[in-house]
Length: 189
Image 1: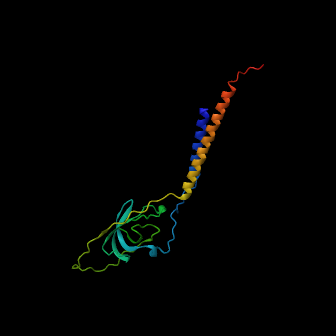
Image 2: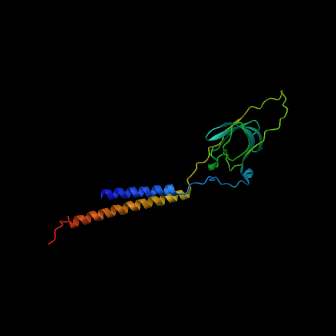
Image 3: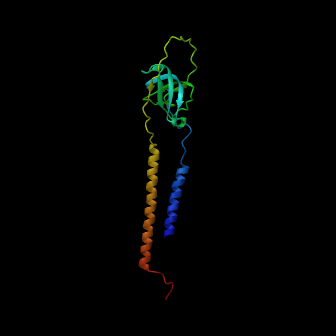
């Protein structure tokens, strides 16, 4: 009896593992967004040079502001993931970009483009340099697993529980039938 239960448990675990392995993988283009209207959705559009890149965000020196209340010369921190598959963006330190953001978050769907180098404008030595202003963005919202994966996991859990329940019931029935019949003697009259 214990061997049957162990075999059933192993087969259940194997079948669940095969479902996970055989389920379709996320496509490389998992980030799908409408790239039109990004400027309208953005609450801030700036052109600037990336000064720092971390796993969770970037810092850029703002050169010009196309939309929003930030001023040129400010230092801006934005939250962004590094992988484009999850709608992040792989920023490069020292590169100049035109960046859209909403609520302090940017990414592939927000609207990011590499900007050409600025035209050289003669500077006057008497002009005071603007002191950078640090602006910190809000954290990005948490990612929630897709509803399909949650439903699939719930269905598989219910199926596995049902298989275990059926197996345990069969085992009890077989054990009770052995007790009522008694051991077979193997002798005939």
